[in-house]
Length: 424
RNA sequence: GGAGCGGUGGCUGAGUGGUCGAAAGCACCGGUUUGCUAAAUCGGCGUACGGGUCAAACUGUACCGCAGGUUCGAAUCCUGUCCGCUCCGCCA
Image (cartoon, rainbow, N blue to C red):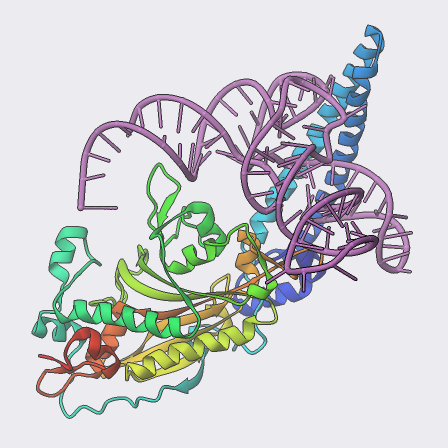
């Protein structure tokens, strides 16, 4: 959420930014409402001050008559104040409604447009495989090697759930181990996180769990929701806290299950593991100063590349276009892996993404930092990035590493944990 | 799930409906002094938003989990809610 004062001062450029993202927000209305609101606020404060003064005189009033008069005056002042306050609150509410829809600012280098306008930045070290045979998709490969059970998943939990079996389980765990080990070596503190979080935390991160188009599962009669990503819990870890500037950047990597309703995704290409209601993910998260966040974003992007280079998976990195950025993101890089089994002849499929959310989340969660020796606090910047989402990574690994004889090579870095070099 | 207790400043922890923005201690910052990784002593020490100033000084409002209510006046009373703790039950 953008600062209100900032909105008022920079309304034209914010409108421009909204237009760039294809979001319509009545920013000018905020400017008008805000000045009315401040007027009401001053009025209410003034009336309140008078009421305070009046009530302070009452204990000193000796005789009953002056006392009674003061009480009357106080009552009247309070009533006037309450009216002004109510009017203020209504204005405040209207402003917040608009304000909450305003997306974060956008990095100047972000390409303009929608999904198709994303800018291809570069490719990974591993070239696309050249098959001398018709490659199978991961679902077929899974059947062949008894790796998944989608039917049982549907029977037990409904469509979109699955069981992993045999080497798929080893691969799933291996990917987690690999990512956590690598990130620990790079100064990220590993944490396992709750898979549920309170509604206000989700809101702070920029989700609206109880809204009409939510992707979030909520537990009825409680404030709990199943998390869609550890970004929620990792960001929430420091909600309301003030961090000493020397401790920044604070780098975490969290392991969690992720739950998504995928509402509205019915009918979209969703075969197999690609679009599911539950998966496992190792997530990077960082709290930084404003000066550090761009560099940290680069770092996260590089780490994602390093991981997928190590997994020997071909990929490309794209700079997501303005219209395709989520509300909280200032800039977002997606890493898309080559998936030979998707579509006809293979397609790119998103496997990780990293966003710089600047102070959008920290304002809502109230995470600040303080420079020692200096007065006051500032909002931190937050960044998140997928290290590995095991399901989608597995798709890429299985489909790219399949051999003509139907066997599948296990990437070297995972072999210690998988316990073999070949599946089948 | 049942019962009870509790949420106060960076932390610990007082607080009778009226000068409480809130005692005290710790921590922290500054001064003094004795002089050896420290002790003693004095002073300062919340946050947000607004006014004020070159900048300060100064000043207004709000904030004692959150939201309502009662009252001239609420940290203090009432209701709801969220969170936490303890005990019991259940359980990996």
